Image (cartoon, rainbow, N blue to C red; front, side, top):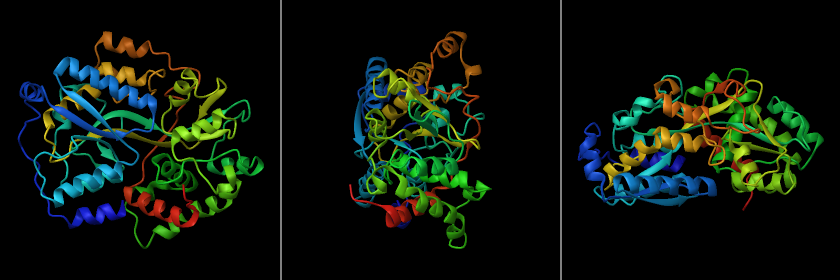
Length: 399
């Protein structure tokens, strides 16, 4: 991502084509009919893939839009594709129509004027969004400015098998103490996997006495001092990990499989409902539960954005709008489907729609909103790009 950010800065800006007005929804729907939308989105979860397929069925039924899921292992691949098209002068009908995006990838695309918009706040279902109560106006501290629309809320939780690890662990120091006493029973996905980098961020936030320093970009003057507690922690933790820290699961699902196989007892997740969903799908034992740290855990939103050169901007906006609909949001929050948090404001919904949310059984392994505690802010993207690079130099192993 450091390379992408530099490359993006060197490329001359190309204005987004003003060929469709997001505020003219009747015209958007008319133009969207018959379009194919290539949604580049992480493809590492069967349940997420199934949800995206359902979205495709619904937008085809209601709007005549064909949704093709282009499965990614790394969102940076999609960013690279758009950058390459810009270099080649392919400004009218790019290969990507929508990206599941946030953080450093969004910052790089926004800085290089690679995004269509602003559009998000003109979508009809924006009226239901909890723009004030949830962190939806910024993305890893970067102002969204209407260039991406939210579709899911996430917060870090730790999944543990209570058959082997009965009590929650309240801090990173407590995790280190437990892992030292129970070597081989914990791991996390290998960075640059997003859950792996999330673990690094969460560790740093919890270890710092004042994590607010992470809201501003990292500098040459403060980076080493601020991150020193993280490297000291990881130096102690790594030898205690599964396979002595010489191998890591490649993804979040692979990490959960280690719990299912009885190889580890603790995993990190960015979905408070993931453990319940995994129990329902027989991916985790019924003894699995979740906890958060005493000082709270990092939370953020998942967004979708439309590249500046998409040839199906209207169709992409139709999909983005549907993702914010009460119907789609309730399905995503159902722990037997995804267990994602909703971006909607319940007070803005009709009584009928709110009743659907009220009727959801969140499950035994899903913490209530009150039990999720304090939501810690995401650091500025500049911290994560440097930390991920440094982690690879210090601890990285070949897959």
